[in-house]
Image (cartoon, rainbow over all chains, first blue to last red; front, side, top):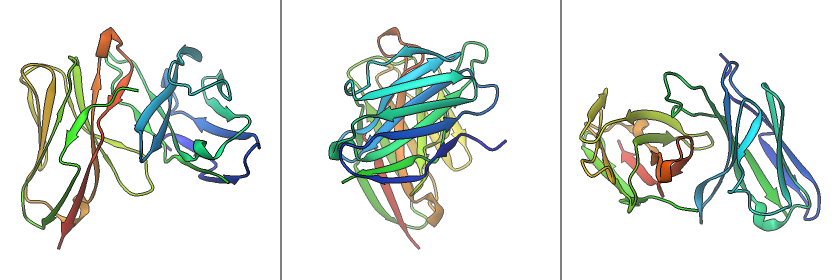
Length: 116
Length: 113
């Protein structure tokens, strides 16, 4: 299994530009999570999906952030317009429900975003 | 967002030493997890704990789910250089939410050969 795949691995952009981060979860997993990691705030859950439906987006910082999951094998996190304070590592993770447990979240390698 | 209090923040030890770190919360969790993050990578699950008082081992790693359900401990015995990384605790089940992980602030471990 290839694991969770994220692209791009690195992104450098200028303030005001649109940024799109992509994630392919592990095949067969029914949950997908987007996290952001910074030195100041640690690992924060932004949004998660179950069976392609957004369940909780209370961690999304503001309206500039949006996430979609058009099918079971693909999700995007979009920032428009981007700002320097959005610079962080963005992780995608997926998991499956097994006998009521879905705590084993498998993380992707992350996208390192730098907004100048 | 909420974070769990994890200590120590960092540890610098000699190879062969044992390591202990802990995580505390003011809230109850139903599941406690321990992850390790290597530089440039995402967190990887080490141990999962499902019951208060549970003690679980994974090789040289041992973790315990606190009896109050508000804390957890991770011990690493006979540390080796590849143990270097950031260790995160995570709690699941806060406020009845069954799918949201709350992460600790992390413990940076450095092991000198």
